[in-house]
Length: 473
Image (cartoon, rainbow, N blue to C red; front, side, top):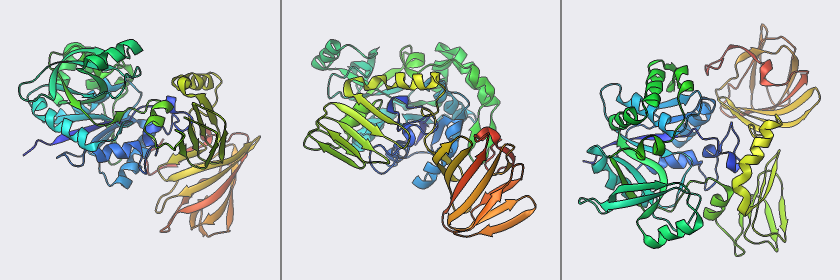
């Protein structure tokens, strides 16, 4: 019987190079970029055919409710959702999961998978994992090398050595090379034996911790202290202690793989990309006869080799070539395809200017549902609030604003001071400054209402919570 693996899904990235679709509070791994499922959900479905334990998902604490909701809609019950108080790259994230998995004396096989990759051939992925399992069981630290389809300079490469006696598809590792020049990448393809570095791994929990302790004892110590000080937050959220904030940031490749003597590479032919840019997304998206990838309401005339995406409005492209156009409710990106790697420079400027478009969408997701901002101006804000069945907002008050609620659809159970009442469609209420209030949806369907805020402080800083079922402060 095949050994069970414990999938560790790393979902902590910010995805700035896919702005404006990807934002800090709703990054690319939680978006439907290809197909009907999000990248996280596609990752969770990828190992279904393997014998496996309930997955551990490592994510930023700000994304915990998005992760929980996407797991629920996918029908996946995680073994744990580990909440990073700060991003520290993949080596510490994997260490948190390994320490969690090994603390009761267990030593499971950890299958470490980033949540933001596209894999066109699940069969190719599963074949590589199955080949790697016997070696990882015996103490190898296995990385997965993707058979390259072109001399790509945006990926790291793994140079494979001698194949193992047991399996020609698993070999020793000679060297890792970071993002080579075009000439070198072409030479790698011509010579053979070089593979794209996928950033996916398979190893025993204790083996990884031993190697991390040997090569990066500072990372190991910080992660061990953070796990020792962790606390449980609701059903399956585990919040490491603040010691994790002091942990150095490093990748599994740099911290362990380039130093260990236990490294092996399992080759995989699986149509892989890490979706690190709009160019990469355009490469895997369906194209028309003119080489254009279209998403949403798009018209293209005399246009070739473009990626055109509409989310809220019609996008009309006329006579352009090699261009990326991405429209959202509050921002539009227009970029030459050969410059899309520099989108992060645009995001950096937004941070410098203290803007919010790099961090928030007009639609913000909460554990109870979501809120969409329609209009904002001096002293007012108009939102559409959607509360999921059986959910409720916190009991709260505001010091600097009033709120006016108009129910559009469903039933609203309202607490306002000592009052408690129900509103139906086309009914409204008013929440004065300083009044304790709560909004809940007691019905079987979604509750939709329009909220108009009026005041001189309209941000989340003006929310004072008294009781919250989701554990938010």
